[in-house]
Length: 276
Image (cartoon, rainbow, N blue to C red; front, side, top):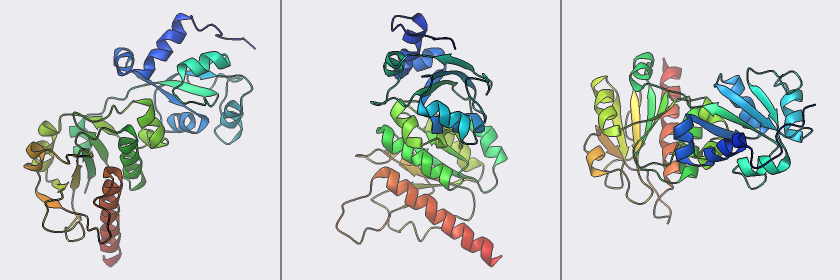
């Protein structure tokens, strides 16, 4: 088997390593994913995987080829270019402290909000306003995937969707639900004019998230970890809700709050469908 790329000075390695930065990702229109699970999810979801980097003989490579995923470097399968690399090269390219033996370069998808809006019946959206922690953003994406949400709308000031920490915390959900970086000040009025109710989480709300009706198309608006939803966007909401906290905690983490709202929607819609 080809020994592949072993030099850290290789020009291709430098380009892959640059994907750890937003500038490098934006310039190339690609991002890096790591680990057999996430790489497998990318393939199964139809993502445009350009290149797979792998350490020959690593457990991650065996997992890709032997756990029902059905592709591997020997077959050069999966529609991507497979490139063997050394441990040192993988360590330079990967963001994780302990690289998993396989990584992939994936092309950024280009989702349009209006086509998603038109295709959805009783759509369920999450709009994220300036959520800065990649782990929080990734968890929101994962929760949105879990409930079958239509899309996640990521507003200005938020963590980069393709930041390695964001990607890792989605656990593959990034490939299951459309994630749309956008200007929420432009997108929310379009949603409202299309019949989507915009509901903002706010500590100043006078009724709880359990009092609102989520039977129709809904877009939840959640905000920055410290400041919450901006005043500009809050003014665009049809209503505001608060999550009751009978205990002594001051508030919920924004990712936890988004998850509560999403699952209350699931509960309401399941009950409604059962009654029908």
